[in-house]
Length: 118
Image (cartoon, rainbow, N blue to C red; front, side, top):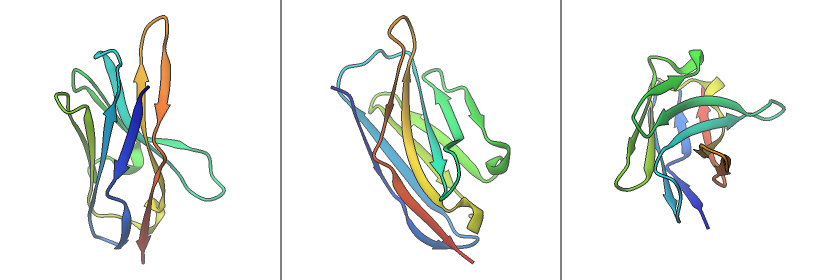
């Protein structure tokens, strides 16, 4: 059974930084994509950043230049370094593991709250 455990959320002032971590455990195919999505109150869940097992990355326009996604394949862990945080970054951040192939599947973490005060 695959589990994703997130850590690193919290309260920070605008302009500050936070680092999120997500560790995946269990058995899954090594060719995959890990990433972060977020959901603010009253809004749909949206992509923040994703990274493939080959370390190709994709970012939402709203976070480009401020957030950096990285991963440690040996630890099955993905990180999100968030700098220059803005109040509009406030949301619950969810870790995602996407498995490709005929049995494609998405796993989700429980979510971690990020609150940016102005």
